[in-house]
Picture: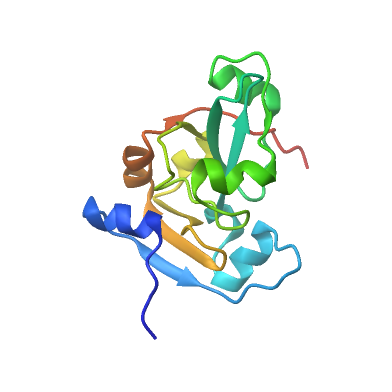
Length: 162
């Protein structure tokens, strides 16, 4: 079966950036990042999710954080010099990014948005992010992801105290 290329994959190909595609079966029920890590067969700490937030004027910001972490809204707002941010309405996601929930890649969005990746990424050589379709993950070198998305590395997640 021929591999279907997403916008994210096409962009990486165009930039001649190496990546590895992992696909998995998706169900209609909600799949969190821990389940995705299990299906792809990797440590949950290596899997990152893409969140799109907006300010009161509907300017958009992209945050890439580990799936086993929670975004600290106050730190997120500070990272992009905003007073307050909120998650973008899901109904607007495809129109703004070109991607759907569960398949939103930080790579190859319709426009280049200010992108922040959490500092936990500094401990990783490569991570998994959405490949731009549900059931598709891309393993990419962290330095290449930062360069491709023009991301700034800042602390934007809650400290986990177990």
